[in-house]
Each structure stands twice: as structure tokens, then as C-alpha cells.
Length: 243
Ligand SMILES: [Zn+2]
Image: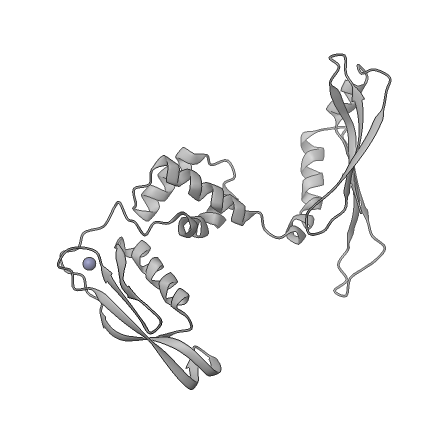
């Protein structure tokens, strides 16, 4: 088997270790070769990888010319007397985050304890609270997908906030510009919650305006109107996200 890079090989080994409850350590890792082996005493499982420089070679369906790749030279893929490793040093937060990002996306209500239980039960590894925190944090960071995807959800967002907050005012304005694939383009959005409308009735008769630049990839500005309530605190009335 040939790999495009050492990293690709490492990822495969990582997944193998996860799926089989093994802990694999690296014995050698230099410019020319990589040797990994099962950490358990007396277990013969071991893989040796060597760099090959070819004028051209085939990786999957792709033909790569003048490339270097990494090929398995020798492999003993049987474990002897190895038990499932519960406290596995290969369980890195980045890997767990990657494996669980989708699941977390579907269950935004999971807190650390629940997440930890799920990971421990399903993956079969023992994870301490601190690790679970790191994993969930990294997975959530992965989940904040590209902003374009978020814009696609604006309609569902409006429907949902209108359903759960009757008498809210929520208006989305589309741009006159249409992109090549005929998609509608977002221009502005105005939101005034019913609670803010009601609360404003008890505010002082002042309206202030403010705004700030949005630092995301799409830019734009957030503009707000505020008042001062009877407690001398700032009270938001409405806000709008504009180009
Ligand atoms: Zn083993």
C-alpha cells in the first residue's frame, strides 16, 4: 500500500487504533522511514514505511508524476495477547473533535458530561473531564462552518423566531444582484423583538444609535438603536445587519 504523505499514513494508523482499541507508538520517524508498533509488551504488530521517489506512480486513480510517496515495506498486522486499551494515549482531542463534529452539530444541547459519556461508550476509551472539555471545544470550533452556509439558513431562522416570538418584526431584504448560479443574495436584515417593543414603553424618551463593523469574511455592519431603562442601563430596541 502506498500513501501520498506521512500524514496520510499517520491518519490511517490513528483511525485503526481508534477502531480497534490499540495504542500504537512510533519507533522511528526520519526523512526516509517510519516504523510504528503496538505498545503492548510482546505484541509483534508492527508496520514499516519507506519513502520512495518515483518518476511517476499511481495513488488511487490519480497519476502523480515525479512525486515521492510512502510505501509499506513490511507489516505484521496481527496482535498477540493484546487487550483493548482503555487509557489510550492516541486519543488526541483534535482527532476526537474531528470524529464527533457532525454528531455534536445534531445535538447542540450536549454538555460536557453527556458528551464524555457518549465518547467513552461509543469509542471505548476512558476520557477525563479536562480532555472532554478540550474535545468538545475543538469540535464546536470545527462546527462553525463557512459563513455562506449560515446565510443559507436565514429563512429557517426567521421562521423559527417568528414562531417562538409572536409579534416580532423580522425583515430580510435581498440584493438586486443575482449570482451566476441564480442564487438570491442577502443584503440586509432587521430584527425587533416583541419583548424589546414592550420594554421600550417603560424606557426614558431617548433613542440612541450605534454601529460596529462585522469582522467575518463577509464584512458588513451591525447597527442598533438603544434606549435607557428605569435602571439607567442601556436597553436595545432593534438591530439591523447591513452591507
Ligand atoms: Zn498489539
